[in-house]
Image (cartoon, rainbow, N blue to C red):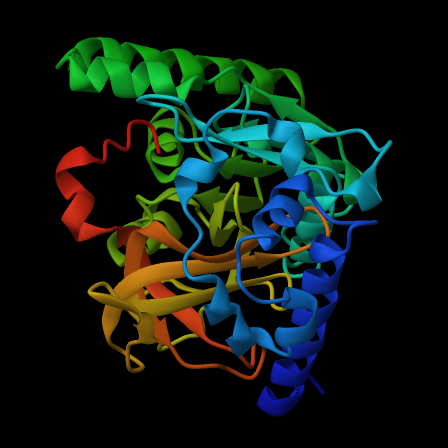
Length: 355
């Protein structure tokens, strides 16, 4: 039996108290939050008794993550451990950067438990056809493969270059770069016959399937992420592209980790439904004009993220995405999101590139 809704909420409240105590304790906390505590007007360790009390912090601002020193985000309690830094965005201006010690490993180990071994066989190898360089996926997918007893093969992919080409209207060059990425993937697939599992983005999955039969290439499970994940693509991938391979869509980002899809059953619509990895992260859907207020179930709104880990405390960050609020389910007795997509008010400024 899984958790009840009340048990899940109690666990979240207890975890919130523990993480707030960690980040605001002078012995273990992160310099950013210890400094910020001086001007908060309240003592988080005394006044945050549960998840709802995070409203006292207001909203987390993404500008805090642009530029250095990045070490101000490393908790004193994690001192001496190897630190990775992952970037998000960066197509214009200074990218947001996030320090990571254990999170990318813990997040993907938890995710590993949600994918079926029948289609993602333990001991089989992975191919990662997604953004490389300073992005979390570069290490996270490799760790997922290693955690499951496999080896991860990679391609080189710089999405910022693609976005730059698209903004300049050089669509032929962007297409040429996409083909360059696919050529790398095909070369690896043909050379290594133990690859059964694939991570990629919707656009790249479609481009790969145009060149090779996913089934004949030996792929049995596809883990796919990116904001191009629509109900239409979900259906297209399952019915047309994958030839029987399992499709595991995901909603993830550098700041939160990754949300797990609710497995589709016969008779379900093709809507893509995700649940966050509570209590380590929560996703809520809020009124864009009153982001303190949750919308009703089934209503659309802006995505608000909260991350609660020993590596990183990020209360109530307004994401550049929108979705419908999804009620809890048996597997995940907390709120989820349906059909995440770029926030419509930002549409004119968001260029997705190869994602």
